[in-house]
Length: 139
Image 1 (tube, one colour):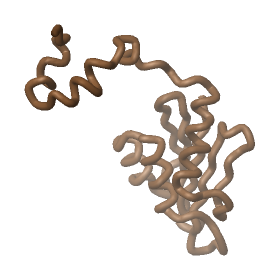
Image 2 (tube, one colour):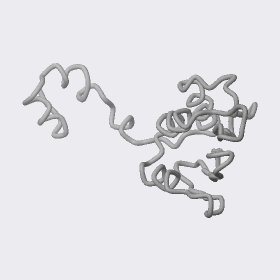
Image 3 (cartoon, helix red, strand yellow):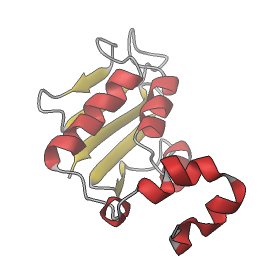
């Protein structure tokens, strides 16, 4: 029986893994495929759905699923999303911690900030009366 070199280490630790996983994986499955525009749009819709944001005050997702805006509830506002909603979406979209840290460190004296990652553009701002506002658009 021939075991590919990439599976040798797994063979030493778990024969079942080789039989059901690594040995059965065609080489072409290991090459990442960039998401299509439809898959990317599903990413914003999927993130909003995973976080239970459908109908949440302060959350707007366009019909095409290419733009998501989350406006958190500030002390001078009657309604809005929570900062936990923002965190949930960022985690669902797997936004790197470096970008999330920049968002956390934004102050009211800073102008609107922007970042791009994985084909998405992130724009955010902070104001003491309206708190945090994030817009994610599919690039």
